[in-house]
Image 1 (cartoon, protein in one colour):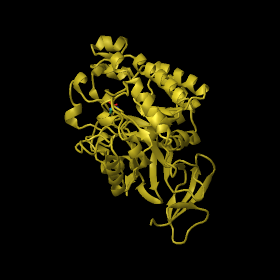
Image 2: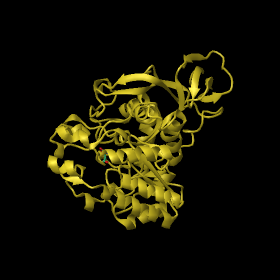
Image 3: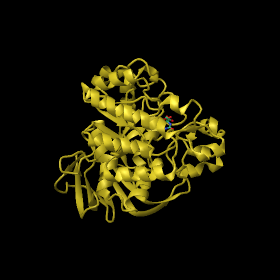
Image 4: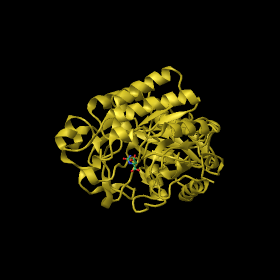
Length: 426
Ligand SMILES: NC(=O)N[C@@H](CC(=O)O)C(=O)O
């Protein structure tokens, strides 16, 4: 069991400063005897952050990340739970595979690692994976995704939605019509892609799938989650669908909230990501949608890649960028500094909504007595310059390198135990 803790003077969800007491891993109403004192004067206390979308690469690509190194990056980023995507090798498409990821996470012991199950066998898009067995396994899988690939066949998507409804599951869709996007697309389709001579990915390839899937969710009375929304058109569809009462949720990544196609001019593969960076007008729509609740959550899409997969000509490099360690600072910079969200809003989009979407009952919440002590303490005034070489991830594909951001995670407490103190792993 963890040693008792007193956290003094933290602004809980950005409100009035007060003390928080932790004993036996839960929040209690008075100072426990013999407690360690953590001075949180000037810090904001949030419920531990929850990431709906993390690539941990184990099994299969332990040269890029492992469950342990990804858990370290998560803890440094203020996360106490991460959903580990299924596109590993082998794919997480069986109960055994899901339990193995769960067990690796428990052995690392720094965050709750909750496996995502594949929707289709081997991410092949044809045959449903063992959804029910994964749901009933020790891993209690509730989120299913072929992320990296779209569940393109509408019959398969319809059946998956019908199936997960039985146990309150959700399909997290990588919305991208491969026929509209084309096999070689590698950046946003627009005037710039033409000038750079790179095959482009039109926003409509995302939007048509979002539109189709909300209709399938309505028809099946099931639940769909749209992963990494990246266009203003997708936001319009989501706004309409929510107004109809359709059970749809959505996430946006930190990079789609701040980085734009303008960065592609030097063909630096660190900015190559799927879905691609978009123009300013999409970024503005995503920020507004996150602020007004049309987009429910921020999710990192932390996608570590080894140097030999990323250091290539733009067209040949792997898709994806790191995100766990910098997510809170980016959201603080983009959403809090601008006044678009307050800290209670950050708690909503980075902890409470993702915990609810993923069915993680011990996460999220409101820092009330009796709740598990998963906490993130943030210095809203800290000014940090990101250094990719200071990362605890195994990979270095960090698009934030050398950027200065305001707001940073200082301490992370997982189940009553500090995992990060003063920005460093304990
Ligand atoms: N988001 C990314 O750019 N990459 C993801 C998968 C994907 O292609 O979506 C990855 O696993 O690397």
